[in-house]
Image (cartoon, rainbow, N blue to C red):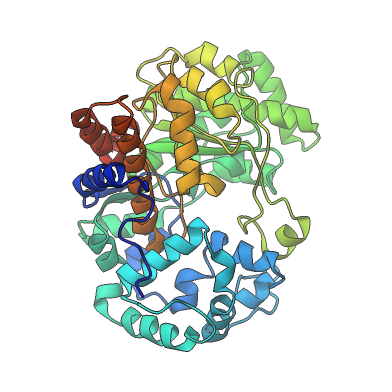
Length: 468
């Protein structure tokens, strides 16, 4: 029995399905543009083999281990490192068995579709993963990982990736990106500037991080002017290593546009560690506007990932640190929150601000109307819990009537799980083609335009939005 249905995600009406299939066939083999994600650049710098199936599919993928945790499996039993260096499961086969015997938990989730796509199309598996097939699938994948054809660079090329963007903090030395660049390999892997650790007063070690920012740049980051100049210096450093964008993960979409004197006073306050929660949020908001202004200077695309309660479980955060599957969506206001930034730079046609949301109720009410009016705004694709068939379809149905297709930016996979990249892009391509086929079938779009839009959503819009 095949692990993947060739007509998966297409409409059930035969005529509309045929049209969706034709649209999909026109874009299925286009190169992958992956402009935002969290793959490790070290993979491509060293090009060493992936250690084992568990390290490839389970340990780095918070979509996978969060589901297992929800059913009572401790993260330590899945090999996820502890912040204190405490004991964790180190036998990859045992981790794989725990994963396999619970694989039924993923039924009808996008994770199951991504994983089965990877198993079938990357590793040639035909048997469904289960407790009974755990060892056989482990052995099959492990044997293939020992082959040169399964090293990171070879898979990058096999997947048809034209460009892949990783995300690094402002203090990163970008050594792996330099190694990639100096290796002579033709694969394009670029970085993204993610300054949360030196922008968010509630980030652990914020004051020390700002001090390190000053040491790296030779700027006096105890002053507001020096602090801003330090960001300009680091942004230039990241651009030299291929960056075309910055990314900002804030709990709210709040922005501010304070005077230099007011902003400086607020900076002095947050640097002492005595700022209130509201002052910390105001500072993050001010820095979004400052980053937007810097983007007008240096051309970096600005991404805002707002509305996630990061690290919601205090217990998991204390034991295992950030990004362990406990970033939870919240209600988010965009109309009032973004107004200071939009008053400052929203009408700039040479600026691209990409908005991501975890609050789907804001699509039609707030985000689409704003992106359909402000030249600087574009809507990012569905993210985190919503990068699924249902999530992508809800997005298209909610925003297209107001923002159109060309105020969106195509798709990005936002993943740490390397083998899921082609699977995620395949889901996006199929879903978009299903949506376009329905528009044609209901007389809202002509077929020629549908083929053009399918190409744009798959390839061109992401390249243009991210300057790639």
